[in-house]
Image 1 (spheres, rainbow, N blue to C red):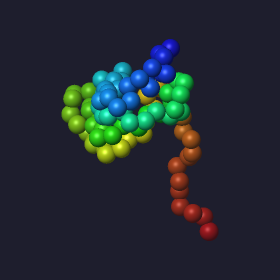
Image 2: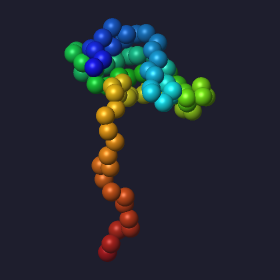
Image 3: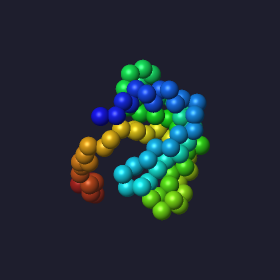
Length: 85
């Protein structure tokens, strides 16, 4: 298990978060949540999202994301249909 608390040491630095797919997110690390202990969320400024092929697919002035290992994906709410009257 990675030591996510060490991410606090990277605040005010430009960081690159890499994923198993080859995608990556690069930006200035401006904040960590919670403010101490293992980091659950980070805020990046001037973030760029790169595809596995290295193409920029999105740019964001500020981006909050979870830098932790993803352990699952599940449907939180079913699809919305028309309102029944």
